[in-house]
Structures are given as structure tokens and as C-alpha cells.
Image 1: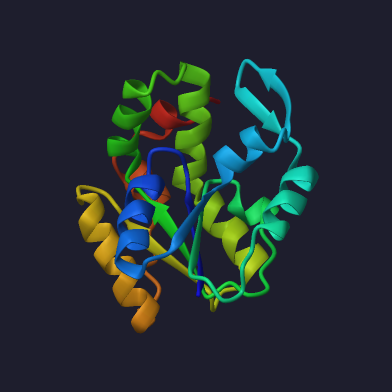
Image 2 (image 1 turned 90 degrees about the vertical axis):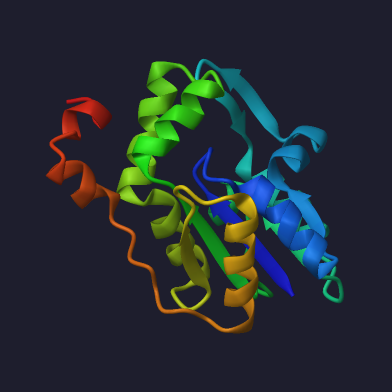
Length: 186
């Protein structure tokens, strides 16, 4: 079994992955650590680290072990993981109203917060995951107001029995609340 856990920064990927890995006795492959340890950082910018995705994809491809349970975790998953051999892709989503607080606590500057919040509202991680891995393998999970062990439990249940798509729609929520300008710069 090879599980991918992805989503925007602050959605709870790494914490949930640790719990799922413990329950499944699975190895965690943290894409961020592989990028740094494997010298896949192309350059450092004001937005953060820029990754050489081709180099990172090659490194990750060499790390797969077909007979071992593995969980690959990171927001770059749709860009650096091949769909072959993937059992399921869990895309973690969090309400932008909660996510903004997490990003502020992490010290993200205003521009980086806006970029990540817009990505979450528009469902970029979900879209890119479906594009890369296919609709059948991708399931989205709403982590808003949930403890990581609750999210991990949902992921484990989904591995056993695929639920119907969640259909998370932050864009409608933000629009209905009249907060488009708050989250989008225009």
C-alpha cells in the first residue's frame, strides 16, 4: 500500500500522516525532507525555497519499496510523484478562516498567506491531485475544527472503504460571506 497525503500548508498533513503511519506500521516519506536532504533546492526566494521538481521526482522514485507500506506526505506530491502504484491520495483541506490563523502562527508573510489561502479556496491541491493521480484515487478530507487523530481515522476508514466525494467548496463560502477581497488581491 502506498498512500499520498497532500494539501496546502497548514492543513494537517504531517501530523495526520504520523498517526496513520503508526496505525499501519508504514514508513513516512516526507517530500520536504527529501528535497532538502537530496539537494533538490534550486534557490531560495522571498517566497521560500524553490525546488527542482525533476530532480526531486527522480529521488522519490528511487525511494519506493513495492512490498512495504509507505506514506508520501507533502504539498508538492502532485508534481513529483508518479501515479503508478499509488493506492489512494488524501487531499487535506481546511477552511480559509481557520487556515489563515495557522499560517499567521507559522510566520508566513502577507503575500505568502494570500497565495496559500487563494490556493486553498480555489482547490488547487485537489485539482492538481486529480489531474496527476486520477479521480478514482483522490479523496478530499475537511480538517476544519478536527483533531489530527480524527482526520487520521477518516483516512484509515477511506483506505478500507472509499467514501463518496466530499465536494468541499470554500469559494462559495467566502463569496457568500462577502470576503472575496479579504482573501484575493484584485
